[in-house]
Length: 416
Image (cartoon, rainbow, N blue to C red):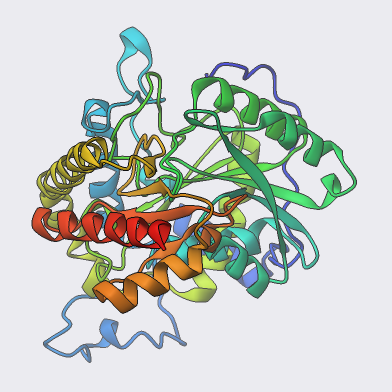
């Protein structure tokens, strides 16, 4: 069990929007027959694939498993269990000393189209209208938008920078114990965060698990960038598999394969048994209402998992190479007024530019002079002016041109 995880006596409160009332007598009898291995015919079977009506282009029988195709989940569970922590520069919470690795249970995985959909499902699971979730700032504005669509408030907590990024856990405690504490149903962490690139540190993890457990708050861990370690500190670990508090770990192919068109994401559920059972009972209802991932997509998951390590390594080499080039360019800049905030992981970084230059003016000038646009810091709710987000993904020649265009624009604007 993770550090700080003592005896757990609380139970997470789930939203009232998910109906898990007792099944009617017919549904109970059907479930009993299934448990006894009895296959019942269905007068109302409207699944055309069971009656020889599926098209040749879409063969097979549609199983309608709300968690997603069982074979795909088993393949994913094997992949997640066997994933080497060394690939990402961190540890693995599932490693249990001399006893090896706790395997991922395929029944604790939910397949869906994206982590965005996962956020939506989890907010439905945990929050009633008017409730709140805690989300990090600076950060990508996706969470606030999805929460708003679910009639839920996203309350920000700050990531602070003092040479490296850290979570202000004292502020988290104040928020959970403050006037909005009763409305807060989940704490969201991005591990590593975008665009700050900061992983959750071991001491932060311990504090977060303890606070969530004390306040019966669920933990949502978005780990889509986890594999792309840049300049991490020691002791990083995935939150996937965290046993100390009800935890929903999000990941998917979009970042793992660098293929945003590969709309495959997943939720891994872990934590105290009672909370996990309650959560999965309700998640099954949500997943069933929205229908499982299509079999056409799910059947490709095993082969894509085979390709994942090579593709992730390829992207990792690109972003690390561009980061090294960026440091060299900044070190050689004669003006030396632009700096890099330490990136621990991910594939985006933040440049600190002179605060006397307005961020909007800087990007507009780059558009006019270099036909190059960008995302200023205020897009991510940075606390002050003077930041620019930069992707490490472009091919090296293009990346160098982009950085030199930024520095040229800054030099021109300072000289005016």
